[in-house]
Length: 135
Image (cartoon, rainbow, N blue to C red; front, side):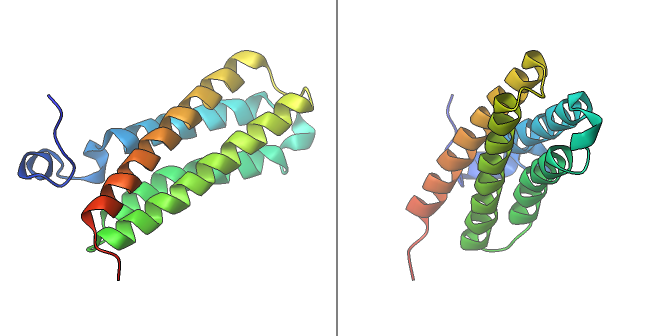
């Protein structure tokens, strides 16, 4: 059964941002980013590792902050920031791969989670825009 975003059934099921599957996936992505960061060489601790961690935390934090906003437009704005952070994560993972400084298994998991989270965010943003009139 597919429940439309914003419908009474959806609103009764979602009591907190923690109930959102996209937020749960973003938290898994953040955990995977920290695993990847620990796998990077020590000389990347203040470079790639720090950037990766900050971007990963930003995804989940922006989903939560946007969900706490009153207006759909603000929510979509924060989700858009989260999409940008996902793109940053993907870029950092690709760079780490090109530099051969990252073992494959943790990178593949983080990349898959980033892709899934990004697709989910894009779908939610599209649905929000369809339901919100443009000023």
